[in-house]
Amino acid sequence: MHNIYTPWCYRFFKNHLILLVFMGLIGCNSEPSSSFINGSFSQWEGDELIGWTNSIFSTTVKNSYLNDTSVLFKSAGNSKITQRVSVIPNKTYVVEGYIEKYEGAKWNVGLWIEGKENLGYHVLESKSYQNPTLVKVKFKADQNFVDINLGFKKYGIYEAVFNDFSMRESRDYIYQESDIVNFIKRTVKLNSFDSLHLHENVVLLTKYVNSLLITPLVDYYNFEGKDLDRENLIQENQIIRDSLKYAFNQLMPSSFLQSYLELPIKETSNAYCVKASESAHDILGVFGVMTRQIHFYNIEDIAVHQCFEYWNPYLQKWIIIDPFYGISYVNASNELIGFEELNELINERQLTKKNIVHLDIEPFYFNYDELKSAWHRVKLGRAGSERLTMF
Image 1 (cartoon, rainbow, N blue to C red):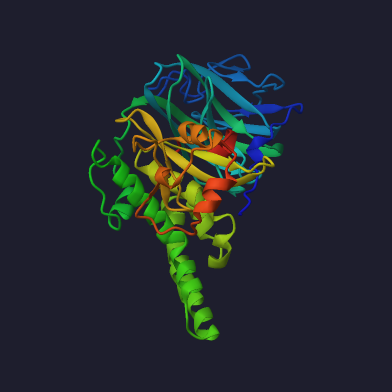
Image 2: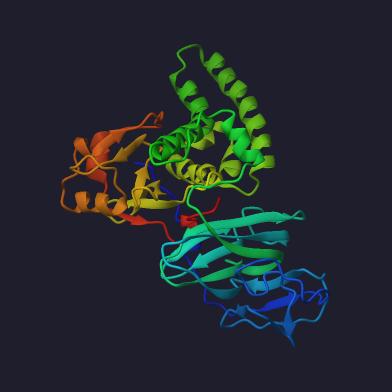
């Protein structure tokens, strides 16, 4: 059985917070088209940033100019600013904006959406950068408002510049052509994202993730020649990995996939279920497919596995995809299911081979007895580990 780490975002701190906000007042009346109030951070009333509220223990001090459109946060950690925005339940929305530069800790700064539940995260990986980086979350509203949060998730001294945030209603599977979309489409033979082909496309994109991360390992493990030739094979594949690493660093900076491609090939096998599921999240996201991570627990209530499910608007349900085992799950009616129905099968001890559908995905590993006996509880990912709908 393979253990997975417990992401830092599962732990929330309640320490005293200090938030210092610096910006200029030039162009106060300019505001991008947005559901936000003051998404350009250009409007102030005294020392208060209009439209945004601070964490309960935060203070805001405006005592220096930055420029006319952006806002600089200096924080003692785990602080945020929040805006509550009215939405229509069951509608899909996109929130996006730029973090123009950042100095701090890894996996710390970004955007997250809260409503009845945590709806989505885009928390950046880099410890520092000086160039604008887009953060973007797509989510399905579960009540008539959401809270949009910007800031830091960890404790420490951090700085970040935020700029030009907006929010809009979105169709479920309308995505914009981009460098990363076109790069992937040159390799993956996708169909239209319609009711007939959505699941097929999700499987194809998940298969693509596996080909990037585990094909070199499979070749290495299955090699039957001399040990030296086997090691040479891994070195040759590492050269290919390095070229992919460069490409995805340009196309998808601050993504799970890019960070996993940075690893030596042999390290990819460690907690591969996590790496595959989170990388699939990144790839599916650029095509507008909403995903969320789900976690499996053994009888000792220890997290032992991770995969993901995606939202199918045509079926109006979540559907599990497990890249590690190369499977989905179905119910007694042979309908694809999500984690809630899978939990029912597990709790009622009715999970059998009939509930497992093998996908056209090369698995890292497969063992039916493990699938049947090891799962005692399944639940949604929480907080930053979920990173529900970034794309």
